[in-house]
Length: 392
Image (cartoon, rainbow, N blue to C red; front, side):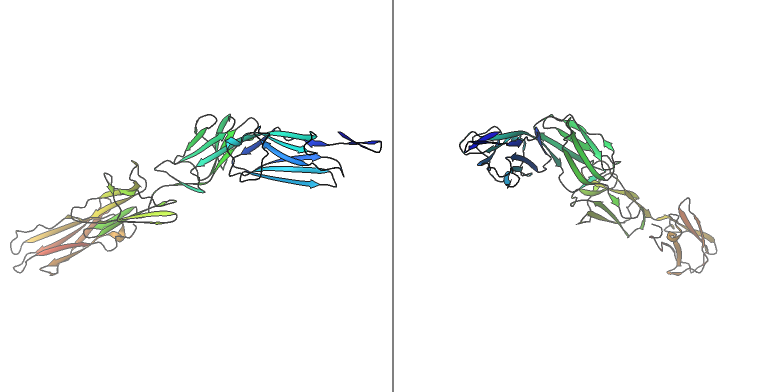
């Protein structure tokens, strides 16, 4: 209350400042604003000065800059004057924590002033990796990390999935606590949040907007059947935010460098061409990172060959009856069943062949009954697989 005397009359002027809250919270890079309000009554004089002070430095008023924005407005008819101090969310750090004071001075140079203060509490959370989309590879467990930089100590930290599931995590530190969530292959896709808990419930949070669990996917057939001279092409792709240079094939014993590698967001694709020779054996190929010991999805290479071949020479007399036998591998798929052809002296054999098969045992057999004549020179047996792509 102040008094003014005019012509022997004394008038009372009621002035009052609205107290700032005891604590103002700067949480997780959110914008902060402090609002100071002075009431002087309708038609009365406005404050001569309005200043903000920070961190108990009462000799140097704050000015608008990259960190602070000061805005003062008036409502003359209502006799209300207000001033706001805003802190740039991108510039806030723990060093800004402490007392902030607002001060209205009615007459410059005189002690008629009104002030109020608040304590700025800073609680900031940074996340790593700081990306909108994060791929966690099931063969190489991904980690989400939240770090708290605060002017006071959190009581605990909690990780949750967007579905509400509470996750297990490891936390270290105190005022600069670090909490790590290691994802497993069974964890869900979606958003994850870390929350540092305080008794006043002004809890800072870190958000990972979209986490995708991904693993290598062999896009080549699960079973591949190839004969000598053919080529088996293995392919594998992985959803990824960038090309995975270390992605290779694994043949059960060694890493196999891909023949081709490409990246088209959001996938890394590798391919390997395996040319089948007389020494090639059945094998299983999978896909993994070269630095990892585990592999995921796989394709099986089945090399189909003649199991029984004709002898290089046959000792037989003219008029004798012989049964010539050829046997070839078969994967049991009807469309992959080998077809035998016989040549006699380079021309189709006139004899009638007898074919049989056993899908469970994995073979097809062809027998050619022949009667040796004086004109007989040679017999050739060939097994042809008409459609090795049928059924995979």
